[in-house]
Length: 389
Image (cartoon, rainbow, N blue to C red; front, top):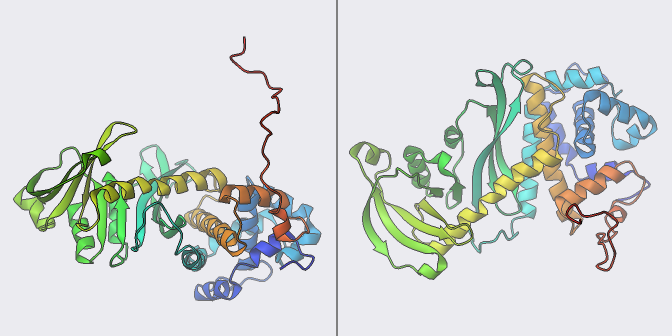
């Protein structure tokens, strides 16, 4: 891969450029464009994500400081703050959404055999949403509350490899449960959700599509017990029941039976009640699956901490969506690179190394060849202890 090229160029080699060109042609992204193409825009924004640039002026300053390297980075156009701002505001954000889905499909194939804590043959998804707060004066289109704006990232995360398979961006007012209407349900898959998605009509649709749901019951859940199954209480399972909904109106939304599993978390001493339409898995596996749902929470925390999606380079809706989709594409690209190059480092460590070496002229594997630095056990700390009186 290395032919005297910089690290950034070698990372971008993993991008399927022909698929990117298809996305650009689909939405006529380069129409009436002379010097700054969609690929130039993507590469500049990807550079900003990998180096945590804080503003458009920051991007412009960094790239102009290495003007002689821009050609080798794949950037052919003239980089300026105004040109990049215009591109983010005007060029169709769906170009980058479709391209991110191309990368997601590649990553899911690479991580298809990745373990996630539960030995299951089925595909397991975790569904959740995170809110990104915005200033109402600058983002009036992102309606949320009376004096506050926000956008929501609704994410369906594939548990194997923690790769987002579906991402839907809405304003803050859209309730989480409404996203179930937009999902294409995969037969045989398991969808793990929190209580915010407890809508029996929508859960019945998942059941009708021959897929499985797993969620938590609310405290006011009304049911009638149809039968009970033996449980091993040493595993934390307190009861395993087949139940039906109570009440004629609610029974119309979900006429069938479902499974109710009550579990006592030994670590926190908290009692959790799960609802599912899967009657085949052991009750302990049901509890274990729900515990794995925290992967989607960790995904949100990771991208908010290490990618540029909490502060935006533009204020209109197109610019925000463009930035978020390119951030997701960069996240998935780093995950692909980890597999393709057989790296043992975490995604966070890979990002840290890329941030430092992104413009270095070196083989990319050389950047990741140094072992993790560890402080020797016998080394004394020179920093005084706060509690050392």
